[in-house]
Image (tube, rainbow, N blue to C red; front, side):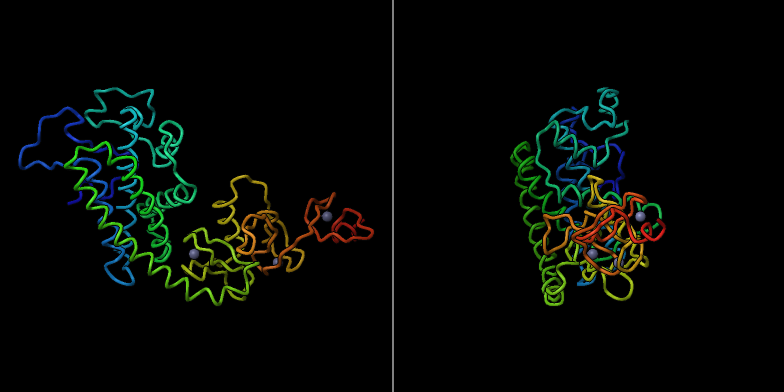
Length: 338
Ligand SMILES: [Zn+2]
Ligand SMILES: [Zn+2]
Ligand SMILES: [Zn+2]
């Protein structure tokens, strides 16, 4: 049974009756403590993602909604262990009365992650945090104009979030539950985990099929910001498309924008006109290619050219390929104009 399916960000948080100091529920009432509720959402997610080899749009929709529901409920359950006021959007405005009535605007998933890190000292890895953020965006997109992400992107992101949430419940929530509830939740988590392994084996099979065709283009292969797999090869003919999830960009410049939004949090990189193909699709000092993920390279999202030695024109500030002898500090266009 799912209580409040598709619970939105900002919805009030289901709480256990015991925690809220209420009497035991009557037989006809629904009694679904938050952790069990969250894990029930997880079971629904894996059911939808493993129902068929190729999940239908409806399965993807509920997988995304319920995974987001699970993340919210579980992250907030942990925040409540720290202090009940932390689930309020603005803890400064929190009152016990409004909390007990469930009458308040709660913090966002991103807000919950930040509070868990800062206040509860909970370790949320970068990959999981990224996937949680993407999941939130998908959930919002679903509610407003449908989902653009496809099955493979949902599979990989979901697997990452599921992995994180399973470990999170084990480490952060189970120890705080009464024995009976803890045992029930633990056995349900085993079921979730088994299904996550099935989802991952689908993913690995697909990645193995791709490995051969990707091995010779590691210097122009990037992580796809939709599925998170390192399968976005730039510089091929035709529209730029992720080989794993098949997300396609009609214009390489849009792919560049999406990439920078997802991966370049320090804003050091910039866009320039490519000295090779003249498209405005060159990412300067920001591409982390599979060949050298620790480096920040300059790579054109249109023609796939990599540039090791780019200089900035002192006049127009565009980048150009510098020459060893007699470099004037100016790009070709500005040299001709001077
Ligand atoms: Zn992809
Ligand atoms: Zn180019
Ligand atoms: Zn110039």
